[in-house]
Length: 180
Ligand code: HEC
Image (cartoon, rainbow, N blue to C red):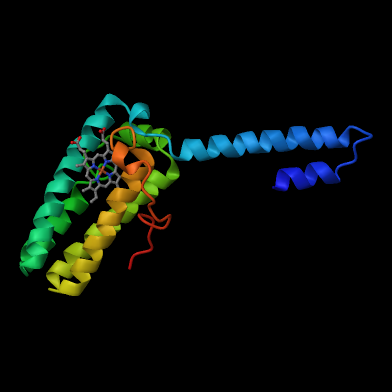
């Protein structure tokens, strides 16, 4: 749309129209590659060590989420607190990663991936707190936000493994905070 309007308004008898086309062409190309980069699967860019750490973390998180769910609906607050804490503590950015691993991770993934990771981190800390204060409505709310964050990250950055999430219409605000 913008493309057409600018071309039309550019004078055709000198080089300006053509320059506008070239400039816009470049901008469009850059825009397109920025979009596809944002949704590029992150796994191929990770070192084997990071991939291993990430998979291990994910398996632990999923198990803890299942246990939290069960604990929330049965009012087992201590388990909610413990499992929320264990999700928080299992994070790859906090785990026994060397400085080099951390640098490797930051270089390999987009800033938004790290933001989603950090947000899930905050949510799990709040969940642990809601377990300690025995606040069931808050636990339910945070569990929902956490589930959104799993889906948001997987549907944006892990579609090479989770193909079923590729076409899902995930709301843009999922997984990015702020904390409820
Ligand atoms: C910031 C991004 C991000 C968030 C948030 C995230 N994941 Fe993942 N998850 C990944 C990536 C990347 C992989 C692929 C790991 C691989 O295969 O190397 C993955 C893989 C997984 C796997 C497959 C593990 C395996 O190899 O068997 C499970 C299960 C999983 N995630 C659960 C969860 C759950 C549950 C949540 C939310 C509580 C969550 N993830 C949140 C990025 C994320």
